[in-house]
Amino acid sequence: MKMNKTNNMKPYTRIPRAALAALCIFSLSPALLCAADTAQPAVVHGTIKSVDTAAHTLVVTERKNNAEQTFQWSDQTLFTERGQSATADALKPSEHVELTYAPGGGTPILQSVHIAPPRTGRHGANNSPTARSNGA
Figure (spheres, rainbow, N blue to C red):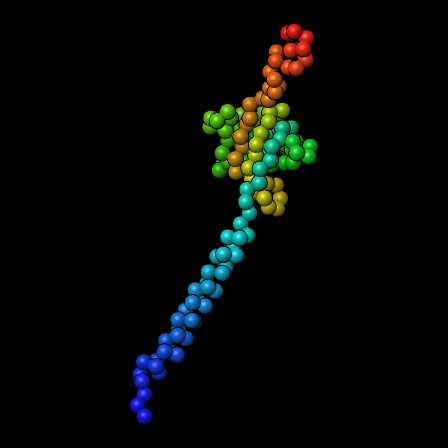
């Protein structure tokens, strides 16, 4: 009986391919798990209550739930005011801000701070429904 060498080799060539595929899948698993655990930046809208430039911290009253929270900025924190680049010196109590930070333990470290322009009334000073009804 004559043996076919190619038929004899097939089972042996499939094992290394299967092992290679399994090795690739298992080697990528930790990277996929780490990517899934990476937290998305959180965003908070609120009003500055206080600023401590020496400690690089600010206390913000959150607009959503009226809770106060302390944040810290670093040298990598980006500050903007009215669309222009700014510094931490622009932070003043009672200003509206949008803060972006990476959630985690301890005091959140800010990634960006956008200082919003002061809010004006929805209808403007002379265009409020009361002013219009009074003939103003």
